[in-house]
Structures are given as structure tokens and as C-alpha cells.
Length: 243
Picture 1: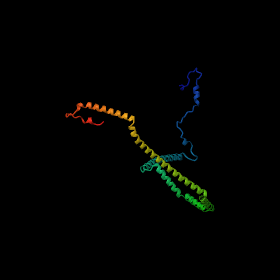
Picture 2: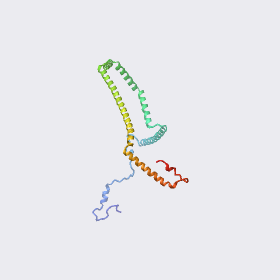
Picture 3: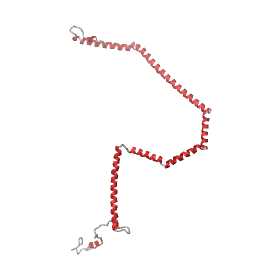
Picture 4: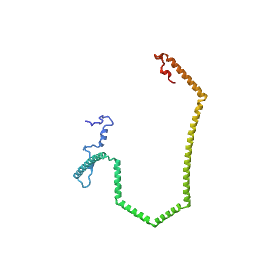
């Protein structure tokens, strides 16, 4: 029986060509894949020792995974407790900062630095240069405050302040007086203009028109109230009502 894929035509020029080309293809006869960890062992280590180390490594990795899960659960529980106590992240940050500052202040380095700065400050303040500079500044300040230029400047500023206050007071009084005069003038003009307005032709013409309109309205009321007289023949009180 011919192999599969082989050309069985005896007259074909490719007779036996496929079978010849397949001879270089490697064939896996074992069927098993090699483990990279087992490929090479350190020198002097047996396979049993390596297997024991692998088992121990597997157990340690499992313990690490379990501890991570436990730690995560503990952190979540601690966060819930802090939230119930009202401990926000900001408050916790403040507490940590205060605690850290206290620890720094109580540290030996801080204490030594403070003592060194205090000693240096004492030496500086007691030195001849510092005393001389202080005395020089005090003398210069005394000379400046007792100088004629300083006194004149101070007097000028004081007079300027007094003049400014007086000017502002005068302006306020003038404005108040002007407003009072304007109010009095308006009242006088109003009292004078009312009689003059009443005697003007325009006002009289308007008054005549109003009187004529009133007469017409009263007349129409009298004509319409003839059938509404009382049995005694008296007119309704509405006929005598003022306009």
C-alpha cells in the first residue's frame, strides 16, 4: 500500500518526490514537554532536594497570598472603625503632623540645635560689635528726633492735618446751609405760587369746565330719579349728595 500523499502515477515526473522531502521533518516520539525548572539544576543538587525546595516555595507563596488577604481585610475593618469615630483623612493627617513635630522637638538633634542657636545668640548680643552697633543706632535716632528738620517736618504735618480737618468741616457746614436754603426757598415759592396759580386764566378756565361738568351730572341724576321718589313725595337723599 502506497503512503498517503505519494504520487502513484508511474508515468508522472514527480514520482516519489513527496516521500523524499518528508524525510527531514523531525518527529516527536516522546510526546512529553520538558519543565524549564527541571531542565537544569544547580551543581551538587539532587532531584529530590530540588523537589523539596519547590514544595517549600509553593507553601511560602500560598502563605504570602493568605497574609495579603488578611491584611486587606484588617485595613478595611480599621477604616470602618475610624469612619465611625469621625476620624477623617484630614484629621488623621493633622494628628500625624502634630505627632511628628513633637517627636522632632523632643529629638536630640533639635535640642542640640536649639542650645547651639541660643549660645550663638548670647555671644552675638554680648559682643563688642553688637553693643557698639546698638549704641550707634540709638545715638543716631536721638540726633534725628532732636534735629530741627525733624521738628519742622512734624510741625508741618500737624498743621496740615489741622487745616485739612478745618477745611472739611467748613465744606460740610456750607453744604448743610445750602441744602437748608434750597428747602426754605422751595417752601416760599410753593406758598407764593399757589394763589397766583389759582387766579391765572388757565386755572379759572379749568375750574369753569369742572363746574359745568358737575352741573350736567347733577341734572342727569335729577331726571333719572323722578320715578324713584318715596311715597311721601320726598326725593332720595342721594339727590342732595355733594359732587
